Image 1 (cartoon, one colour):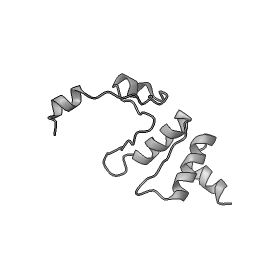
Image 2: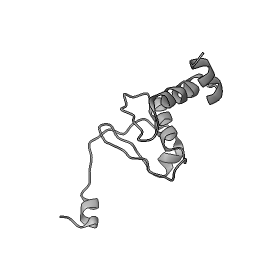
Image 3: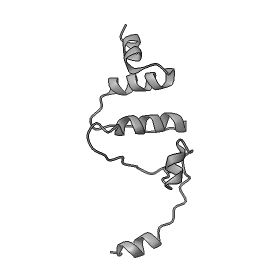
Image 4: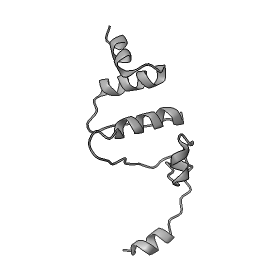
Length: 97
């Protein structure tokens, strides 16, 4: 097993970075790459699922999105809300007419 310093120094990837969605991530040198699994971790109700969902939508690349605590209906409503530009309440009332 390699020590952390040696493992870090030897890391190189050929995976292509996904398109930049938010400049703040670029400034902090945070890149998501094609073909890699990324985990977003934070406190409960911090917006992890929404962050990942909006990133996937804005990046406009094929994405496998799943959330351990968000059901499919909520994901659909959030997606519709973001894509339509309407508030979440309006999007959910339109979908469930």
